[in-house]
Length: 283
Image (cartoon, rainbow, N blue to C red; front, side, top):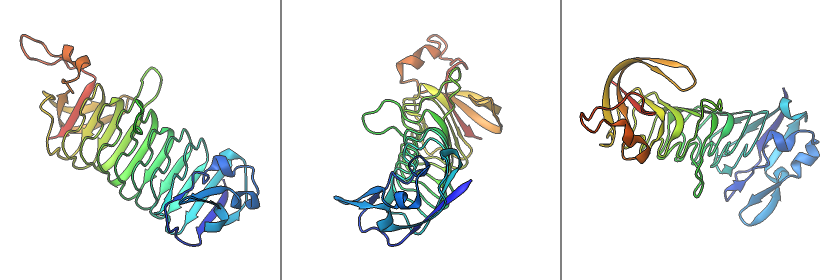
C-alpha cells in the first residue's frame, strides 16, 4: 500500500471535525490538494494543512493507507463513511471514528471516544485500548445500527453498545462486536448481532433482543427477569458458523418482546431452544 502520513502540528482548542481524513477523500489527490481539504474548528472553516503536516504519496483508493501521529483525542469523525483502504491511528482518538464505514480497516493504537463504529456496515475497526459509550450503535432517530463488519475493542466499552444491530444469515451479513468487558444495556434492541465479551458485563444485556447472540465469558451483574434459563452448554454456534467452546449457561430472551412470546409453552413454562434471542454466560 502507498502511505500518506499525517502528523498533528498542534492540538485543536475545540473538537476538530475531520471526516475528510479518509482514503475515499485522499485517493487520487496530490499532497497539496489534501492539505486544502476543509475541516471545521468550532464555527470556523479551516484546512487540514492548518493542523497537520502531510507527507507521502497519493494512490488509488484500494491502495491508500493513512498513518496518523500525534495526540488526536480531540479530532472527530476520522474514517467516516470510508469504503476501502486503511487508516492507522497511533494515538487516542475522538468521537465517531469509523462511523458508517462500509469497507476497509481502521486500527486505533489507543482509546476511542463515544460512538466508535456507529452504524458500521462493513469493514473492520480495531481499538487496542478502551472505547466510550454507543460502540457500533444506531444514531438517535435511526432504527438500524451496525449491519455488517467487525468491531474489536481489546479493553472495556461503555453503555448501550450495538443498539439496534441488524444481521441476516441469508443476506450474509454478520455484524460482530468483540470486547474485553462491557457496560450496561449491551445489545439493546438487537435484531441479529453477535457480541462476544471476554470478561464481565454490567446489567441488562440483551434488553429487547429479538434475534442475536451475546456470549459473556465472565459474569453479568444482573440478568433481566424476562430472560429464561435453558440449561448448560459446552459449545455455542454463532450465526456465521464459528463455534465457541467452554461451559456456559444459556438463556432465552428477551421474552418481554412480543415476537419472542411464542417461544414459551404456556402449560409447562418451558422455552424452545429455537428462540433466536440468546444469552450465554460462563459457568
